Picture 1 (cartoon, helix red, strand yellow):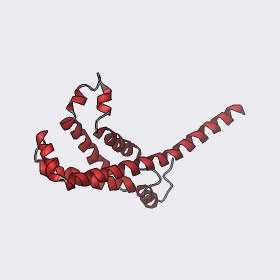
Picture 2 (cartoon, one colour):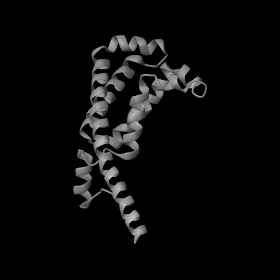
Picture 3 (cartoon, one colour):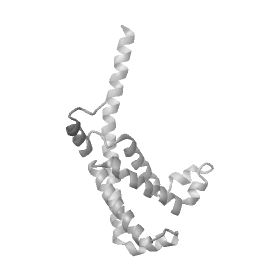
Picture 4 (cartoon, helix red, strand yellow):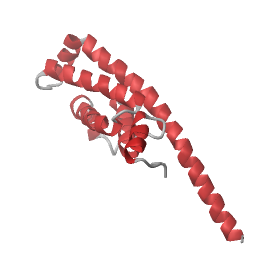
Length: 159
């Protein structure tokens, strides 16, 4: 009798935490999606200055790169904000943030094991972290993706 109560209590807690996780994903998506929109608009609005920076860190075709990164950050931010095609849009965003580390923050990669705080303090870190979380866990129940998937598969997708 006692072990059944413990088992039911445990799974009740797990289900509650899983449900709360959807709200956490929503907060993460709204905050970082909004920041990505602003970052993309900032690049697109100051393309020549950002292209000069890209050229200084030896990124080929810097003006084209600025427009590509700016457009993907803008569209990716909108995607995150609304939870629409998030798993697809996070793939190019992960590539962008990894390239940002290798091109502009190489010193933090070299000292990753000896000084991990330098890696974490870099500008792309939280954007990369956010996109990896959403890529891994999806956009959650409070998203356009969830409702489209639920309608398309005609079943409840919550676990």
